[in-house]
Image 1: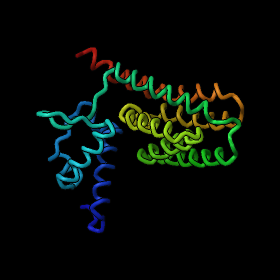
Image 2: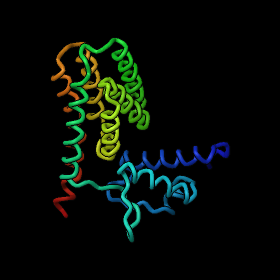
Image 3: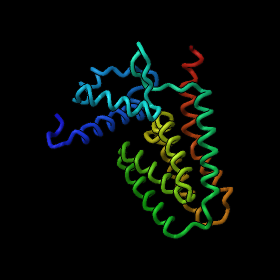
Image 4: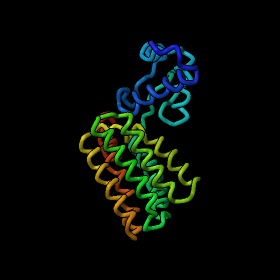
Length: 223
């Protein structure tokens, strides 16, 4: 039972939080139907809150709602994945190149603290904590570009690719690679090679993209 002390806003946020977590960590696979009655029972929530949660995740591009079908976890084809990442890579490279190097000591210290938090969550195998610390690291990093509109666009694409990339935060090999690349990013921020730094930022997202393409590849071939 959910604590009665929660406000309606907190109850709604909890439903969205749990539904998003179930999707991005693969408990509901791409293409799976999201039946309201099942979700109500799973989360102990009212139909209103479940519907609002589905609506919110539809806005983020994670859920698809269609007439006579209902809500499903959004499935992206291989071509859609490649196109989405193409845009995300262009935005990432541009933001990285706009960060003046060597970076200020305050930025490096802030990123180092976020990286320590990320590693702590990884060691604890706290999937939600890993996800939140990872995104906080990247938002803080790209905010140093000085262009809030570019950062907002990057955040939109980070949200759009959540079902594609979050699974790797639970993958030992993918998580270890992510941690090493974060550390290398911080080191490159101390230097002056903007192109090497920008390329690393682009390379950083390739593991999850290729993993998702591999996972859906067999299904597309069978189809």
